[in-house]
Image (cartoon, rainbow, N blue to C red; front, side):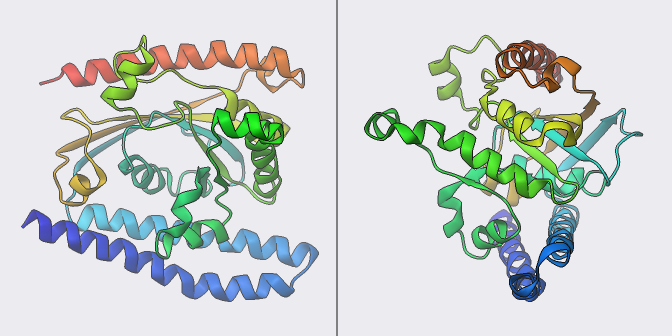
Length: 291
């Protein structure tokens, strides 16, 4: 029965992505011939597709009863659809992405994030994300950077280019600060000092802060907890994830981090994120101890 549910959920997801292409193709054609303010307005309108996409995926979770989800918002009164936000979260499973999109909608502007270049080959979903302005990043090895030093700045260059597009209209920029999904193997290899988190990496955040300058209104800090174990995406679609907790906090961005001095900004940012990560790890640890 669970396998049937999982297959039906996959069909729903692919069908939802396929339907996205109907309005998306129309607006893409129009934006190709548009210019100036008209093109800017069309790009903003295309983000309505992200909301529609997210809303349908939220219906999937409810109708298929995939999990028992608890979402706790803190200091959300000042959030607005007319502002820009930097969103950070811990990362453990592909499930995190669908949960974030479904539950930040419609409190925040459409969520966009940097994703692996390989995902562009996922049927319907990969090209739709690219067309909707989700920037793709390419993993570069140390050997590749040594052979071609220009690649050393590729992440920064890609981020700054993406941020120019984000400034077109209110957007929520998501960054998984750990840089990868947390697994037991990665946790042990990294020798992380946190119980349930990998060490935070601030490079991507620093680039976003540089690229978005004064556009960002606040930081939205999300903690995703799977009290009974982290599911694979397939497990989640089969309904094998009994419970999920999401803690969402709106935080002001310290003035020192908004400064233009890159070196000082990175230092202040590292201390601030580390403090948030300590708090986040305690939160996850307490939830995991709950019977």
